[in-house]
Length: 110
Image 1 (cartoon, rainbow, N blue to C red):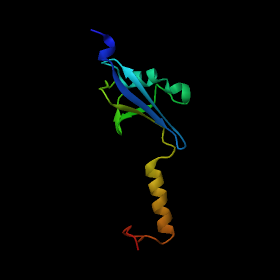
Image 2 (image 1 turned 45 degrees about the vertical axis):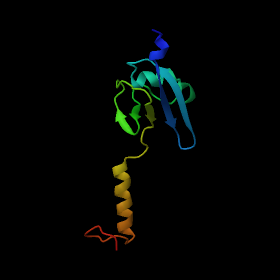
Image 3 (image 1 turned 90 degrees about the horizontal axis):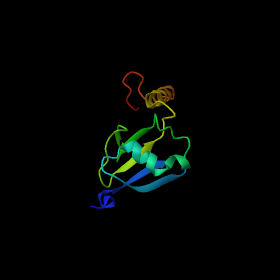
Image 4 (image 1 turned 60 degrees about the horizontal axis):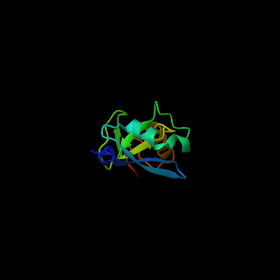
């Protein structure tokens, strides 16, 4: 049996605010998410990707580097957060309270 027939296509994607790169590759059964990222050569386009600590997902679901791929999946490479979402919400709520846009006791909009 020809080994190439067993290989299947997956997509690796990485996006920045101003650009994105999608690379379709063929992988063998048993290939993990991180192996697909390495095989895609995405790091050549975006050298800032740290393969040891990068977070990966499949269709918006966070996955482990060792998760095995199935045909047609899309491996998403996530960028690190630049701000803690909890801190951002807290600052936004405090600003609204200071500006009188929310009730100081209940937190409801006025």
